[in-house]
Amino acid sequence: MQPMMLLVLVMACDLAAGPRRVQRLGRLTALHPHGLLGAMTVSHRITHITGGGSDGWDLFRKARRMIAQGRPVIELTIGEHDIRTDPRILDAMDAAARGGHTGYAAVPGIPDLRAEIAARVTVQSGIETTPEEVLVVPGGQAGLFMAHHATCDVGDGALYIDPYYATYPGTIRGAGAVALPVEARARDGFVPRAADIEAAIAGFDGRMRSLLLNTPNNPTGAVYGREALDEIAELCTRRDLWLISDEVYEGQVWEGEHISPRALPGMAERTLVVGSMSKGHAMTGSRVGWIVGPGEAIAALEDLATHMTYGIPGFIQDAALEALRMGVGFETEVAAPFRRRRDIAARLLAAQQVVHAVPMQGAMYAFLDIRATGLDGEGFADRLLKERGIAVMPGESFGRAAAGHVRVALTVDDARLEHALGELLALAAQLARKRGSEPTPRTA
Ligand code: PMP
Image (cartoon, rainbow, N blue to C red; front, side, top):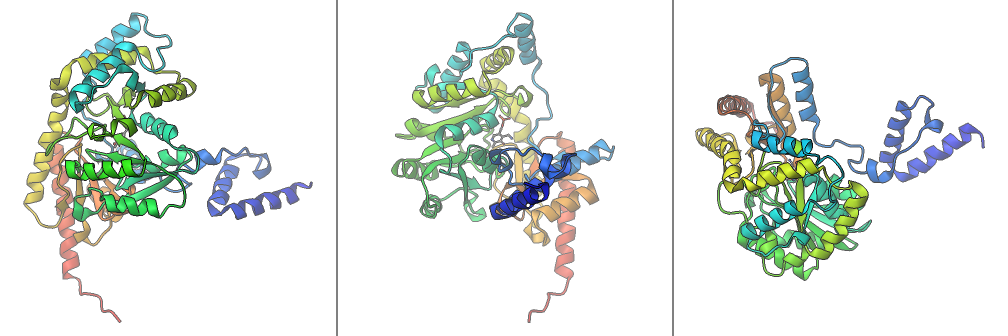
């Protein structure tokens, strides 16, 4: 076949596959020196993760570029502590590595660490948990990815709550499942309603397999109460769904209490809890977390781990063990600055009327409703960065239900945070005033 004919054929096939695929091929071709015919394509499974569109991190990248150019930016985008990993944990890591723990480590996790996590989960949730029900994974993100691989087959439906942590839909799509959002409403404090989850199940023409919950919640800061969780648990049982419970912020609760849905009646057999050392122990870069679930599911996940990561470094696991053995007092210490800054934010917000805060019940963010400015989250975040050098995440990065909001990470020292919030509120007030003084547009 002539090259030109082949080109037309490929283009025709891709047009049939839809515009996204064409866009994707276009991008790959542009990168390849030999053009379309010489280009290698990557799998649909991977390109489909973000679908070629925005992954929600555009503003974050823009802020990082400005910082790289030497421009003064207060960065309140990602959930990264302003403290580093505690020296005692680093000492344990160093001693383990120098002591020879640098070879392959046990794939499901070293026995002591699995036992320590099991003991912790038993105490905190009240559900007796054995080491065989624990898999050590390279961070919460990998845990979420693996949990969806374990529960969903290709084409199955997997539910998640909108607003959501930015990687959720891509994580689900990466497992070959269909990512289905369920909106939680601002007027419900962003706590999902069982009836909306039911409606999403009814609206999906396929097998629904899982529901992903996150409490304390990123980005909204909501902590789900018992009533809401009981309803959701009942629904999961009735609809025979897996519950994937993202509890990476379990140690950062400012109001109410953290309830692990796995502890609710009948839920241990259908829940996979994803936990992490990142937030509670300021160990984001160590990439260590866990999945807790029924023994058979954990054994199957170990098989996945064997073929995916072949375990995580032994010296990191030793450091994680040391960190967990430092007890909850240490976690309270790590969480203390966020509690303090959340109080600072609450004080500043209470003194004005333009920006409304979603109740800050947990996690390390303030989630702010800026609709009174007349801008959406993206427009407001853009102006805040351009005009005041402050980078926050637009709500739209976290889903449709989060439109008109911005998320402020409470991850700089108190004085800088107070300054940044002051600037944010001043810009919001200026925009709201301007909006108020503009003549109301006439409608036809
Ligand atoms: N879930 C949520 C809700 C998060 O906010 C994050 C990180 N920001 C993760 C999971 C992943 O955390 P890690 O991989 O660092 O454990």
